[in-house]
Amino acid sequence: MWLSQLLVAAAIAAQAGTDAAAATTVIRHRTFAIPYQLHEAKDEAAQPVEVQLFVSTDRGANWRFYAKGPVSQKHFMFRAGGDGEYWFAIRMIDRSGRVRPASISGPGLKVVVDASGKTQPKTEAQRRTTKKAEQTPKGSVAVAVNPPIGNRHDADADADANAERPRMVNSRLFELEYEIDQIGPSGIGRVELWGTRDGGRTWRSFALDDDNRSPMLVSVPGEGIYGFCVTVSNGAGLGGKPPAPGDRPELLIGVDLTKPVARIVSAKQGVDGETGHLIISWQADDRMLADRPVSLFYSEGVAGPWRPLAEGLENSGRHAWRIDEQTPASFYLRMEVRDVAGNVCTHEMSEPVEIDRSLPKVRIRGVRPLGGH
Image (tube, rainbow, N blue to C red; front, side, top):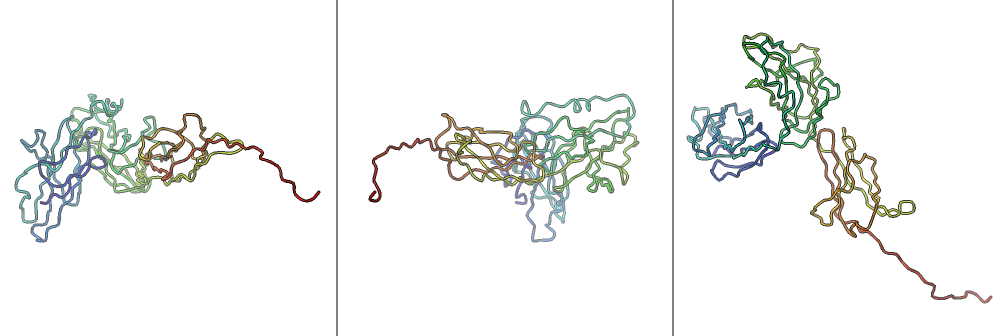
């Protein structure tokens, strides 16, 4: 069996094998990546040189060829036409020209795309990309970044695409939304994404948009700051001039895959002026923490459910929580710390906090004289 894993990046668990019993996973995104891994063959002639992705929308009754690529590509990008159930299978061609497996016996992955009512509504920019003006394209586009695919991230819809500060995401895979100014009778011939890692001194082609429609799916190799611009040519081949060395990026994207480092240091009842409060101390560090990145939760059980204690705290390292009659006598503490890219570090105390509400009483029992006078 040549297919060892078929999975949807960052959102779908791996499904091994190609049998019809493959588990079904629900995803809210209509655009996602399907990485794959192939076993290496001992025979040189049997080494895979090309991988093919097939999709079925009728539960395996019919299979349709979707895309092909080199073994080194490691993944396919898939864009669903709408909500529904999609089955996927992989076939490969070896050096001798043989197709493995000879026929598709079943899916390696089943995905239910359910975007209705769960994804954010289209932005005005997205709606405008569907309208075509009867004029000639100028060869330039406006670009913005959507939240990364399959990752938790709160995008700032009002961010200026030309701002010097990069837009931070916590995924190597994200959607780049663009808007074409004008479209003439010949239509759009080519939409190409150009990227730079050195502020515009050098540029290289990152991707072509296969359907020439926003958004464009972008995959980057790793963490770092990326500058992007998009070029467009019309159906007659006019336009599409790539950026020149020294041109400034239209959009800066910072890819941060590293979670903050954080832990709760202590939780003690306050004394003197802080009597009646629980003093919670913590340490949290990251290169780019979010504004008010700290949230605290408590639970009477070690496994939850967790209730908010205080959310959106500044990283001051300390919070005084007022103890009242509703405060449990014993509970666990949890802290979440978020950076600007949406990475979240979670730390839970292994031992419960014990609230001491006892009021000691004292009475004089007697007196004992000391000495002889």
